Image (cartoon, rainbow, N blue to C red; front, side, top):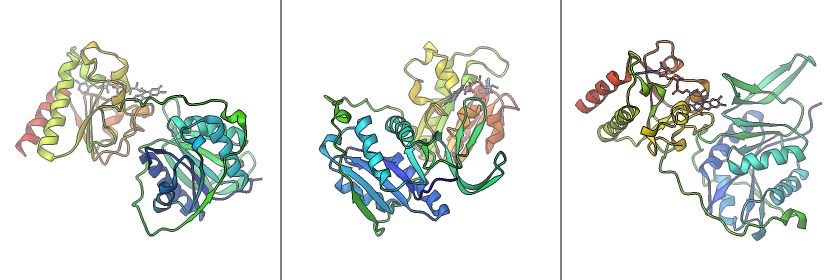
Length: 360
Ligand SMILES: Cc1cc2nc3c(=O)[nH]c(=O)nc-3n(C[C@H](O)[C@H](O)[C@H](O)COP(=O)(O)OP(=O)(O)OC[C@H]3O[C@@H](n4cnc5c(N)ncnc54)[C@H](O)[C@@H]3O)c2cc1C
């Protein structure tokens, strides 16, 4: 028996008095799901001094906002935040509850799911609404939220949770585009108090040190030139100095930026990063990693140089508008998904590409 529930809830995150971009992405994902289910989007926001964010949540797609605004909540703390969520859920059980797969969501979503006695599907890259036939009980479930995520090996898994509600999911940043802001949208705002439980507030934040921002802006790049372990060898399998491959990729990115006016960035496969090559020390770091355990990107152009295209890499770049791949191996999966597959040695092909772009 499916538990009674309604609406798609979103846990909204904010930083320095603004909603974060992943929050806008998840709101747009929730809107898509809620429209298919004929339900409302409910944004949940917790913190301090939230007044100016509440209408914004409605402008970006929420029909209703549940808010708990208290100076004791000015920084994220696991226990009081979970208690606030439980108080909100007691007032009405959601059909699904989406969190951002980031530091807060990865802590809060499992705590919430445990207390709400339901399951959790983490790191989703797509959310679908479909009917589902469960063979073991011979039951047809209508309009089920299907949670799609890469598994730990080589596949993309579709997770069905037909009975327990809410269906709780974390959504990886970079997979949905934020909706256009619509300042005409109207919605309802409901305030909740912080439950009085001193145990929840036993942990205190004494000071906050911001993590230095990464110098690599993969999410903001319009064109990413991404390097893989293929830079270690030429087309005949002879070893190459990886700093040459890096310089070639960098030159390609700079030429594209000069000639086409695109914002470019250098990305990398986890294979290349984990190789910890001294020649690339400080040039290729974990901040450059694209894929399941790195950043998800969706640039106008993604250029994969010497990257095989494992599923873990592909799930991080498959929303790129145009993919160019250079690989010596005709069977490399990256070539099969590329709009412009180039079978060849990157040390020969990239200089040709640079020359062509320079010609204009
Ligand atoms: C849980 C888990 C999470 C993971 N997360 C990620 C992730 O987030 N991101 C990620 O990238 N990987 C991830 N991986 C690793 C992933 O499975 C692959 O091992 C990795 O992506 C391989 O990197 P690569 O394609 O650079 O190297 P390789 O697999 O070694 O491929 C190198 C490619 O270069 C080609 N080549 C060789 N020489 C040349 C040349 N001269 N010119 C052109 N082509 C050439 C080869 O034909 C080959 O296709 C993860 C793995 C696991 C198990």
